Amino acid sequence: MLKVNVKGCESFVDAAKYDSYVQKALNAFDVLESEKGAGNDFLGWKHLPSETPVQMLADIDAICANWKAKGVDLVIAIGIGGSYLGAKCVIEALSHNFGRQLKKKDAPEVVFAGNNLSEEYLAELMDLALERNVACIVISKSGTTTEPAVAFRIVKQYIEDTYGKAEAAERIVAITDAARGALKTLSTQEGYKTFVVPDNVGGRFSVLTPVGLLPIAAAGFDIRELLSGALAAEKALAVKSKDNPAVVYAAMRNLLFSELGKKVEILVNYNPKLTYVAEWWKQLYGESEGKDGTGIFPASVNNTADLHSMGQFIQEGSRVMFETVLHVEQAQRRVIIGSDEQNLDQLNFLAGKHVEHCNHMAELGTKLAHIDGGVPQMEVAFEKVDARNLGELLYFFEFACGVSAYALGVNPFNQPGVEAYKKNMFALLEKPGYEEATKAIQARL
Ligand code: PA5
Image (tube, rainbow, N blue to C red):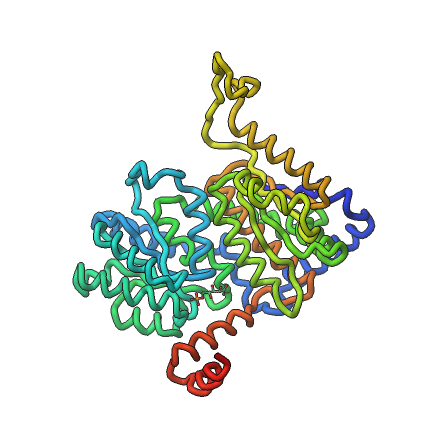
């Protein structure tokens, strides 16, 4: 199981205070486990790893096999927020950094759309589609979100025009609510294969449902391994203990926030493959905790690159942040630094060393420097970036999020604030039903 190390916070916090926050986290753990807290109708994610239907995995395999037989080499996964970031983060973490340039073709390339309203993005996506053999996964739990709906209208039209309507039904899969929403109605009418986002699983907690699993499997990655890691975490984290990693993480971040005024948590990685893990984590914690005028602002940096851009601020700027470092114990590839007779770059002191050794020393040096600069450090340590460890990591962050948000005193499972921009956008776009809002908003311009 991954480990949470809080040694880098010890010089900032009083031990008795920490114990009191562990107690708060243990109380919050009880609320989560009793399934009687606020938002308790959205706890389906807790048992997804242990209750994954075998038939659902077989259906996912069948779709991937069918697309392979048709020679599909581009899958467009349409969705936004929780209907996008889980799949994106796992695919990015497991992909070869240069797979596209190497033209590795063991599985289709999965690209994402519907997570923005950029006209250029969609036009350029269609440039790519023209050169490729295309299938599409459209994902929207509500089935009514504007960004994916706009993208899907365009991609659907392209697929129908290119392959015909009957074949389009073989190439489009929808993942949505069991019974409600425009996407459900459309899928039924068009005869698309559909998967259900369970009613009791919110978008940002849905990576281990078909929302995440189908695009990840379509990209050629092992979803059973991902689920096995998540299952290990489901079992380990269900044990009530002050050493439970979710309790430790929740206790320390709440203490740093409430007692030391650390309003910003920066999730730090030292491996570019983890960039989108941070994007997924930001949604998870931002939407779950940022409400009722409280919450830690989740931010991220990709090191060592960002040490040369954000490093100055983190070292010496406003003292509002703490860091949580994703510490990966082993690189899965080996590159040894060679020796050079002339040594003009003066790097011979590193000859014979692995690049990852330098990476770890950069990480350690940064940790100590940031502690000296007044930035508490936590570490989430795991063995390597593979499907099993990722499954464990994602489940850990979900579970810890529930504990942490309850300890903070907010409902982790709603997101009332997400609606505000939508109302304004619909009013500005003059959507039917928004006539009064349109008049009111135009008067403000
Ligand atoms: O976490 C959430 O619930 C949201 O961020 C949603 O995932 C996002 O708004 C997309 O919603 P939908 O899947 O209904 O299109």
